[in-house]
Amino acid sequence: MTKDLFDKYIWLVDTIYRAGKITLEEINKRWMRSQLSEGTSLPHRTFHNWRNAIEQVFDINIECDRKAGYYYYIENADDMEKGGVRNWLLNTFAVNNLINESHHLKRRILFENIPSGRQFLTPIIEAMRDGLEVNMLHQSYWRDTPTLYTVQPYCIKVFRQRWYVVGFCKERNALRTFSLDRIHQLTTSDIHFTYPKTFDPEGYFADCFGIIVDDEDVETVRIKVSATHRQYVRALPLHSSQTEVETTDEYSIFEYRIKPTFDFKQEILSRGTDMEVLTPEYFRKDIADTIREMSAHYL
Image 1 (tube, rainbow, N blue to C red):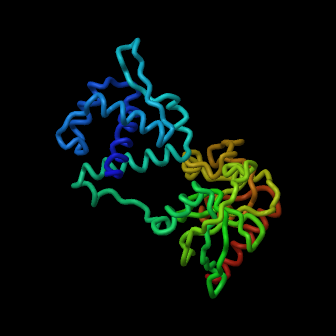
Image 2 (image 1 turned 180 degrees about the horizontal axis):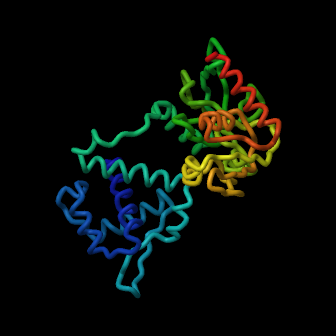
Image 3 (image 1 turned 90 degrees about the horizontal axis):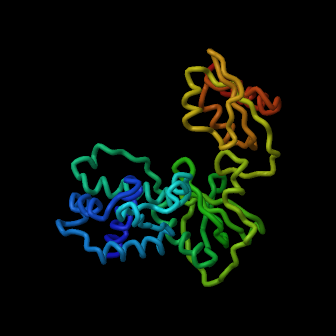
């Protein structure tokens, strides 16, 4: 029952959001075309109950423009386009609802698999919500046996088909990042913690490419990208600081303010001959040394 209601909330928000402004009569027409309706129209009282619930659950306000003829719209809809958890949730569940309504298309829509989120994502989110520590048996790729850690979960992040939890680790007495797919066991304790007001999840990763956060300085990195590849980089920037500072017929030069971490280096190497690091010099040399080591394997 709860899942059905949740799906209906998502459907309503998605319908109004995509329409921009829409009357209740038109909402009901679209509702009747949805399998969620089961052939039953949407009563006024139910619609307004859903509006209230959506505001409480998602912090999304469905407002009414009475002067224009009782058109409903999403308040501050532009904020949803800037990303964040609300946008991710709505996109995820709206697509899921659409697929469920189109059973004959299920085998023709393929998704990336993120197995690490299935078992441990929910209890970690619940622990974050309730301010409770978690005890996790975690095994890194560099250890033969798992280690027990006590973690105060601050935030979660998905990167490259893996979920990660960032939190204060008591055993390390420092902030640490743990991959959920390396957790063997996880239990929620009854010990409360106070989420630090000074911790900013977005700011924590702001200078990084992916999940690696270390003590490296932020550098101005310049990368030369071939003309055949630059459209990909324009469409999907490597980092929020990306700017195209030079453009020619043969190449473009992109500039970043970023920490040249290991995962950023791996991303550049994965682009092959389409990318060349120009500056800083030590990072360029690091890339070149790695390429020589790779080349030696094939000689």
